[in-house]
Image (tube, rainbow, N blue to C red; front, side, top):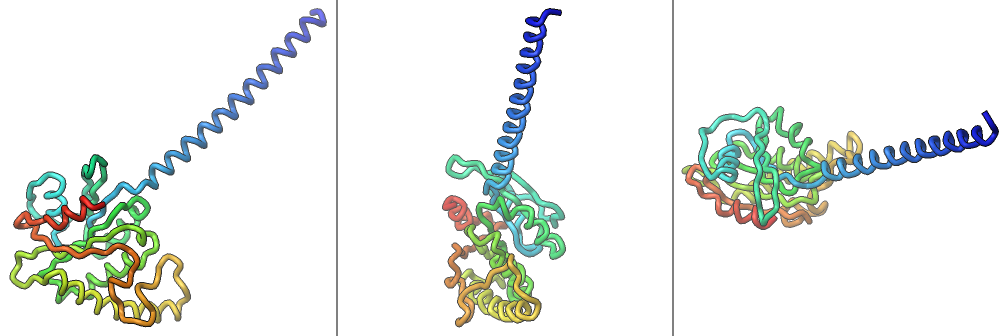
Length: 238
């Protein structure tokens, strides 16, 4: 083999090596770009979450919003997910179980993707269930991961005889959350700060929803009577 042939083979080997390096770099670059866009897509706030305590009527509301039809009431043990179009944009409507052992754990999965949250209350039993309702709502409002999304507090079952209106519900929750806030603040002083939670309202005043910078709205509904106009208004405002 003459010297010229050897040089040509060496040049071909060098070119092949350079091409391999460039190809490997290109694959790595494309992989990083794909990972970036996948993470960005996952973090996109595209979910509207229906949550609240058990037996508040969330699943019936979910059915009315998604299909316009009533379904037989049953206790959900996993989330229901349906597609919802608002102003030409497609969202996921997520109905979360209200069971005490499930609700916060399942909500964790949607914190990064929540566009808005609807907190459903049984307005006919709010008086006897105020502590459980307020505890759950406090955990949501104090969570920094949910502090930038609008929240609708919906007093459902307005058709029931003992139901409370939205203004009464607001006052009841403010009073109970004020007590919870005092207890939680004392616990944090004893246990140390908890970075994922924020102080609600103003430190020198009793708790008021108006003291929160987050958008909080109150509304009434009667899913049983297909009366969800205020809920639909909120959805269209998102």
